[in-house]
Length: 165
Image (tube, rainbow, N blue to C red; front, side, top):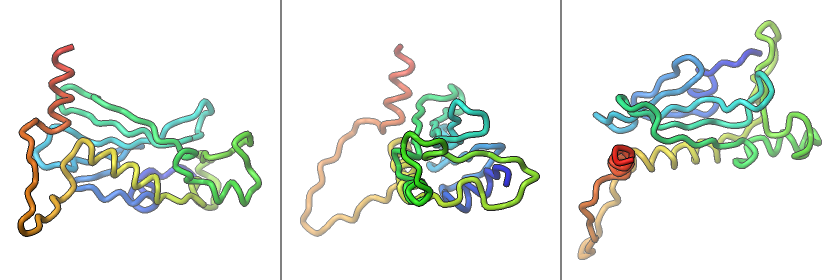
């Protein structure tokens, strides 16, 4: 089966950020309203053609382009641990913790079949939460005081830091 980014990002990984869409081989989202920042999630290639070892997450500014990037490997997230253990693969085996984009004329399961995407999806969400205020504010309890800071959000700090280089 050929690589189908739309099926992967919206069904298998099940990313559900506001204003999210698959464009080409990448998933784009604007998790914070009126923000010039976008989240881009794409496949991270290995040294082999058509083989992927993780996901590349980028924060892209509308005017300045990419401002931050991280790669989350399938091995580090334990995505294919069960599949590889069942197949007898170790970290020194061909095909360990990767999936391959096979010939589109063949049929069969999706290249990423057998993956557990729970930890990967959580890692993508944590990364997005660093840059976007997508988390709800916890409710205050009666009589509790909360220290507030007036410093700008992390994304504004990062943008300001980039201007002063």
